[in-house]
Image (cartoon, rainbow, N blue to C red; front, side, top):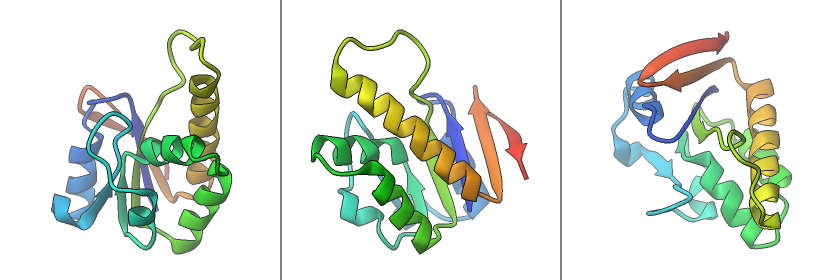
Length: 130
């Protein structure tokens, strides 16, 4: 699996398309702030973008994000993109703090199991694993 991380709108999806050679129709996509595929859309897909959005959906449903990540890992996707959400001011709202924590833990699990990890900043990918 290839994991691509970075801030919002930094070029992760463009790199995902380039590395996969696939068009957008091949990707299951979740965005925390807009058009989303539901959690079940992620299951069985080879290419997942906006993984942090599914973590939010799972937390809001009162379910365990770690179990979802482990289920995704068992399905062995080829490529996952995920926003880094832990930078900046610590949110006042408990759910927002829990969300940041859960995304960070999900990222750790995904990175441990990834053969390659890229961080994208200003459209420039930097390989940090593999």
